[in-house]
Length: 462
Ligand SMILES: Cc1ncc(C[n+]2csc(CCOP(=O)(O)OP(=O)(O)O)c2C)c(N)n1
Ligand SMILES: [Mg+2]
Image (cartoon, rainbow, N blue to C red; front, side, top):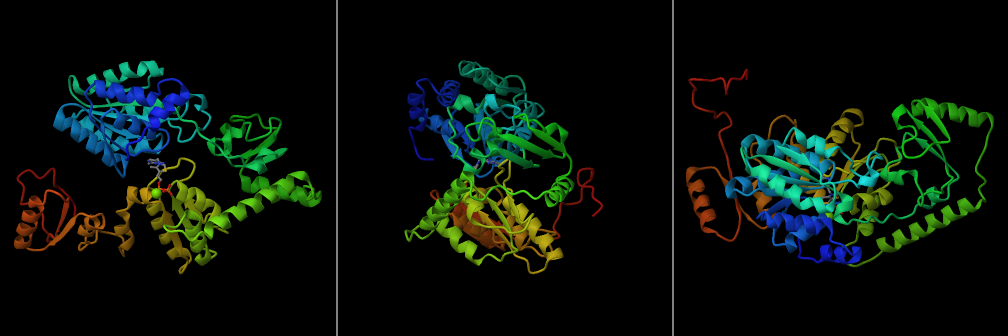
């Protein structure tokens, strides 16, 4: 990550020390010098502040690997490494690494961003009971009660991670401690609506909790949901209909057939919507027609959309890739779009695409699945391309050229089949102090351990 003074700027704007800076300085004061992680909302500023404080930050591709790295630093140096993760899915990915560190008795501190305290229980972006979730995997799991309490909690986490039997500790940092302000674009259709019929949709962060300024203060919600507990979340609906939306919409349509009603097409509301659609469309087209290189998202998606079969399944993840993709890449049929969804989990795309391809093959041979990934999102599960290349998808491809993964990123790759090649590649790799190397060694598929006297560890029915 490039050096930046974003965190400092945040402080100046807020007129107070940001939680990000307090965290970074508290870590540094505890002689914590390494941080691994995957940034995003709401922890990016923490990584920047850590860099400013002189902590080495390494951006990884998956939180689980980041957690393994941080715990290895703890084992190797005696001071805990930090794993920095985003709320919800990021934190959940780190649980495997936390459990591993705790079982190994390796010092580790996981710092997880979490949703804003004022949005708690409202269905905030990536909201999850993180402190509770980490309890099983850690020695200590806590959230500071205020920014001022951060240094003492970090001191306690560092101490707990090292003292007695070392292990993993979790510190939860709500987004509002970090200094984040999220700008939300207004959606005119919702903003000026008098009545909104919610068909199974939750009034969570995606729909801005159903609250002003996104909505008129006196908007009436008619909420249809199969889950009684969802009814009345964040706003009091004018009408609630508890039931399966298939059954409820059928009844609604029957009623509309009997007493046809249509929103007046010449109303001001329609006019505003039509204008907004027109200006959105014009803006997208203008961006798509840009000839500059590298291309922008709109240009790319315009060309992709042009060639997509109408019945294809679109899988998508990323930030801009997904958000802009949602507006430009069309799906015309229900259940034909899969993306990171309401929880925003990066790394789901290739797994979704594999599943979609298998289902498509069984049900609708010839149907295409297109997976549009941001480069970061791709990295979370990129190795699944190996799964994708398998047929049948049972065992790993024995002759996979994993060394190309290293050369793809500028390192050295070796494909080794004989002891001589192995010796040579090892010599070259060890002599090369500039480039990382990956030596891909072919092993006899039937090779196994020598016969064991005590075989309880290796017992298998295979
Ligand atoms: C498991 C998980 N970790 C971290 C995040 C935070 N996060 C949100 S979007 C994103 C990266 C998106 O980048 P990319 O896929 O390259 O899409 P682009 O914005 O470039 O289109 C990350 C890391 C997340 N949502 N899920
Ligand atoms: Mg990207």
